[in-house]
Image (cartoon, rainbow, N blue to C red):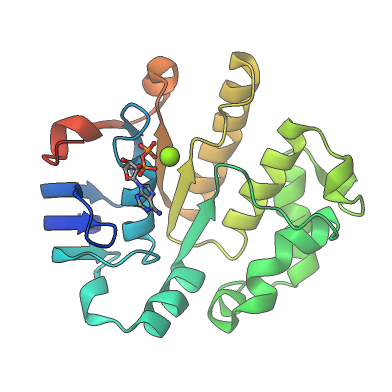
Length: 227
Ligand code: ADP
Ligand code: MG
């Protein structure tokens, strides 16, 4: 089975600061639903940034979906991320003056590579289909500022999922929801990842959700950097 993530001897630090990541080896097979946990400050968000090509490793090799990120220029990494990676941010990062629909279609509006992945389907139709699957289909024309936190989270998930990127990374996106709603959201996220054949890396500091995933990675166990 081919690997979604293949990390060898990765080291990363911010500027001249201490090592934040020192990961001798970490691999993840495609199609996995991975739960990546560790306490606050253990480097979870930093690792997602390296995987998404937002942050550049100081040492070692980071392969994502078979692509060696170290061999790409900054612009090439940006294009690779836009086309192949859906990112659900911790604070959702929705654009407040845009509607639900316009927030969801932002990645395909901005990046031709992602647009090409719609495979002939209309942009609005694809957004409406995803929104329906995540039970926010009747909110498409609302400003995101009028939505509840749970609804905003689903918009953020739709935006990550549109164009069916092969890798979805989610940074503690459920922390502000109660447990039943988190389980419910995760079920929907899993369904969409399965439909698209996507690999999911879901980050949390809370192990209560661990049982829902097919693989658990303890960051403090794989990360040798002393934080
Ligand atoms: P987590 O997501 O697990 O809470 P982070 O990846 O955010 O952890 O942080 C890991 C370490 O890196 C922490 O010590 C944090 O203070 C530091 N750090 C995070 N972002 C930056 C940054 N932009 N500049 C300098 N240090 C940072
Ligand atoms: Mg974090």
